[in-house]
Every structure is written in structure tokens, then in C-alpha cells.
Length: 379
Image (cartoon, rainbow, N blue to C red; front, side, top):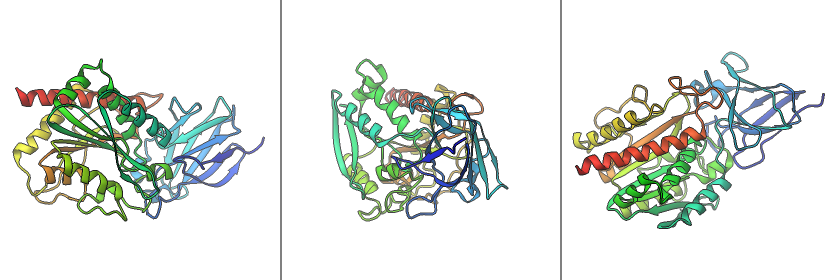
């Protein structure tokens, strides 16, 4: 039988082919642009119809988050629309840590990725469709180092200032699937949650904070090799024009509520991280955040509060991170939403695991929780 072919020279493609033997391949993940991070992979395999593929991705103990591989199944699609999961196993002692993916495609091309990709073409479709909706303003906040636009969508007639932004880390594609779900709610005139939020709020939405990293197939950095979520205290045009443009707009509009949307490699559940440890912390500001968290926890089994990040000690918050900087700078109720790459063990879905569809549904629950939270403040 002939050897399979593996390609990654496309939007967000990322893999290194070490060897191919029939329907088996030994692979590695290249480093992100000018950085030490590596975790995101996205490639296509052709010539394997009806044959069991055995794909070994090696040297993963040196990846950014080796704890992300045990219990993880790779994403796979044959039509680039529906993304399921391919049975995968991890051996940390094989070739520096090896993820072995096994899958038998029914057709001649199969696509594999760390999570369901969100292409820049789909991003442009999302922005254009939303911008064409009644009452939505599009702002070109700035330009990336690769010359791509930084898109912002603004809508709503209310006084309460809400910022939603995603994909500071480009390989966390869950975040833009979440944005797609959020924009469907907010631009649909028949959606009562979206309609009431537009009445109460002025919403500022950046669906993709890192277009360059997204297109280049990076996990965590932009075209300069910069981790954008460590730039919020001192962004620059040379290293982090994306953060500079977004923060400048925030300074113009103000911020009352902010959600920075991410994905977490190792923790298999969705959770929030707050701004404990900021210098100006007050219990009132903290209670506002915890109140929102409690509402979201009640509304959906796809969110929980038992697992998450360690809270910073008083006065020890890292102000280079978005949520801490925005909470400190504006006195806002700010938070980071994290979604998993793995399946949620408390609510498993064997065919897809955590999926684009669940990201979009969680966005709906987040917005419904925001409305309930606002109404409780007004009571």
C-alpha cells in the first residue's frame, strides 16, 4: 500500500513530519513563532481511506502543558464541519512523550487538530455577518504586525459598559466558537436575552485578539513571539499592538464588566478566574464577581467552581494579565473564562467531547447569567 500524505501549509496548520510508513507516521509539533511554546497541531492526512491511521506525535513532555495530554483525544473531521474525537493514548516515556492517535477514515482526507480550528476566513464571515446586523457598529481598532485588522463590534443602547474578548492565545479556538454563540444571541432581534442586554448595556466585542498567531498556527503568541496576556500593564506597538489597540479603546469607553475568553489544556472543565490580589481590591468588587460566578454555576452543568486556578494572595496579582489589569484600572467586574480541550468527566459526550457546539451553548448561558446578574443589581 502507498504511503499516506500529511500537509499543514494552510491557515492555522502546524505539524512537522518526521517519518511516514504506510498508514503510520511519526510527527512533532514545531515551536510557536520566536518562542518556547508548543502545543497546537492542525494537519490533514490524505490517502488513507478505509485504512487505520496510527499517528504518533512525539517529544510532548517538552510541550507547553504536558499535563494536557493524559486523558486527551485528538479532534478529527472528514468534512471540516463536524468535529469528532479520535481514540488517543499518551505515553510520557515513549520518544520524550508520545500521543498516539488511531483513526480509520471513511473518505480519503481526514483533518486532525488540537481543538476544532476557527479559521480566519470564518472569523471574517462572523465579523461581516454581525456588522451587517441592525444596530451593530464595526470598529477597526488597529493593525497587527502581519498587517491583519483588529476587529471590534459594538452594539447596545444602555449605559452599562460590557467588554467581551477572545483568543489572546490563538490556539485556544474554543474562545472564538464561544464568540460565535455570543454574537448569535446578541444580533438576533428575536432573542429575548440579547434584546434585553442591548437595552441595558453598551457591548464591545473583540472576537479574535490575535489574528497573526491564529493564522500562523501558534498556541500562545503573536507574530513577535509575544504572549499577549502578559502585556496589559505596558503594551507596545512593536511587541503587542493588539493589546495596545484594545486597551486604548477601553480607556475611551470605560469598562464595567469584562470577560476574557480562553481554553485550558489540563483542567477538563469550564471555570472562571477572577482578580483576587489586585492592589485596589474591595470586598464589594469581589462579591460582584462571585455573584456572577454563582449564577453561571447554577444555570449550566457545563460550568463548575470546584476546579480552577489558585487565587493570588492580597496585593500579589499579576497586573500584566488582562483580567487583573482591567479590574484594577477600571474597577470593573472582570474575569477569565476557561474552557477545556478534554471532555467534561461529569457530563461526558463520547463522540465529540468538549466541542464547538458546547462552546456556543456556554456562551448563551454566560449571557443569560449576565442578564440575571444585572437584574439582581437593579432590584
